[in-house]
Amino acid sequence: MGAQPPDQVGQLSPDGMWRWDGQRWAPVGQPGQAIQYPPPRSRRWIWWVAGGCALLLVIAIVGGAVGIVSLVRSLQSGGLTCLPADFPQYPGATVAREYTYVGSGTAPGDSHECQESLDSNDDASTITAYYTSHLNSDDWKITGTDTANDEIRFSRVSRPLTVGVIDILGRGQHAVIEIKLDS
Image (tube, rainbow, N blue to C red; front, side, top):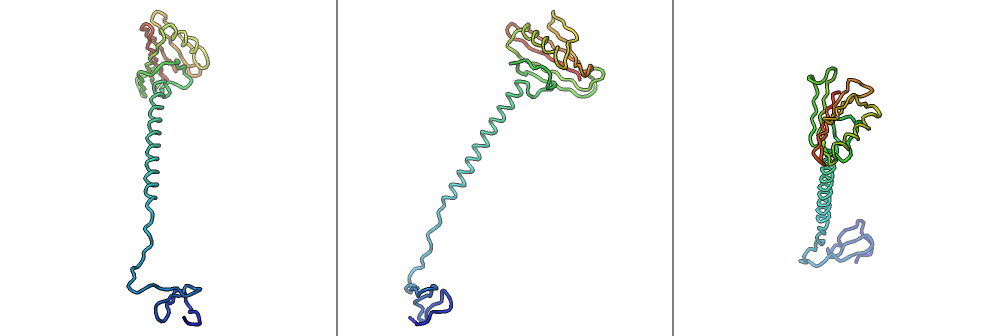
């Protein structure tokens, strides 16, 4: 080869058989020799992306199922009720029906009516005893009772126009608690 190195990396020798790589002359290859391409890239990344998407889908389905179960349990236990948060909730009772009315047609001075029906596996006397003790504390007071019909009338101490009635319908060891609150 020539005695002096070329000026540029990649420059071909005059005979075209050698290429300068910056430090030495390297053979270019034989004429007619097939061009070698780099090996194809691995496609494992596709599997990683697909696996990640599948994992996110499973997490979304599980999260949605947990959310729905939590919402249903909350509804059954009275967690999303039209009754005020400080109103005594009978333990173990499940919400069977709820009705909320806002507007005219409620008790005088009120604009909101809440009706809630609860199911309990306790008898009527146990439920009556619970509400008798819990509605005579905090911001609630009993204004009247009808023991023959298992009915309790009550009002809110801080706002006397907020009134209501609880009817306890005993059916052996099972009872239905009907609550009506005007506020």
